[in-house]
Image (cartoon, rainbow, N blue to C red; front, top):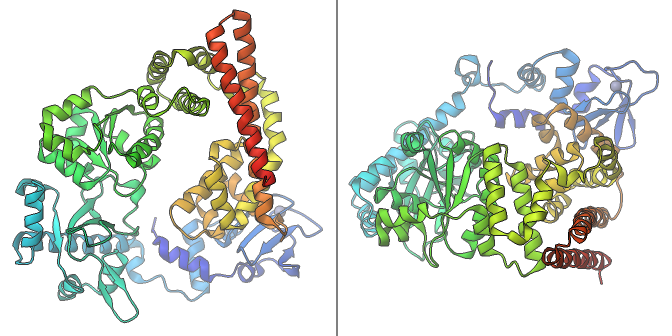
Length: 588
Ligand SMILES: [Zn+2]
């Protein structure tokens, strides 16, 4: 099936007016902000089909159908997504250019790939052969990068110039606009200019080897930023690419062990010293997609991040996606002040691999970086570990993670054990599924209210993202929508709801359109959102306390006094957190 480029689809969607299009099929009349009509999807006598021009979506309060302009046509005319897009393009007199048509369905991606390939060669050539390139050759020599490394990773030099790349591209018949689209040039008020200047350039390759983007490192401390990365483009999606994976593929498949490092230079440093099988996340937190990609090539992941605070934080966050992707996960701890590059340079490959062999378990890592005498920290470690173990789909790993956690934290042993004895027990508290359903439903109004506010206002969505995790939402539908919203926020994409509903399942789409269309124009939206957040947080705390109290009662029966003291302290801490939460909510 022909593929129409995403940006063209976005452009068609943003130019289409849903009221116009729907009016071709359904007589609509204005009612407040919205338009109302008889639903074309179910039989009705009074109008419950509503079209929201501001959000560019429709929703039927009778049958629940909803969506954007494309969904309307697909549903009404029984056509595919592509046909719906084409239909609207025709109606708007937007030409889907010939190059985009069937035969060259992915022509934009193809053209972009040609542009990035050209640029990669240009940069590489400049590094190897130009006079100017001597400055970067001095730098790579200082960092100890061999010709072999420079060649296998296609490293390059972006000259100290505003238009060297643009000019070279023009000579090859490549228009500047393509460089802009690929993130290699920028358009200012007066002119278009090269985006990468006076930098060591790292071409970023998709797993198949195609260059999709670039990273650039400044050659002196005065030049900022230190690292520059291509923006997302139709071929470059940061969360879906791992730097160095292409070069590491064969080794990874053989050894099954993936070293995950933070930066380009870490990876090159390791390669340089004969430590292969590393991949780097560059300038992003490790995403679920990246973890799943890694899991296609190996079974074990070793996180080797910087030993500084930022590195530890990033490690903490990278564990969950790896575990969820089914990778047996270990953390390599480097001494204070080291990163993988500097460590391997000083201690050689054997020294480095020794560290890998001695890697920490997740429980060890957490124990090392949390103060277990602090009730807050202890609760955090306990919650994170139980969550993690529960999310581990690989049953062998699950058992081993649990054993390690219990060995590392004897004080938490019985808590962990009772929490994990039956899958999902922690959340359900041994209640019946029916009771659980009712509980979820009971909480749903608050969650629903908050999701509705998030959908209507980006600021609120950001506020919620800072305060809650998707898992804090118990209702699976709302959790899915929240996850989706967070992803959209994280992508830096425009928070646009007719766009949001393109890429989500039917049930969620209906819910979203309904929520948007039933939102009151309301006052004090932000205050209401804050209230909802507090209520949800309080619920979660109360759950933890109830769970803990049940365990405390069991411990009392069993006369396990040392554990009891621990558990009581944790309980008091939760109580304290709840109090603090309510105080802050009142603005005390
Ligand atoms: Zn209907």
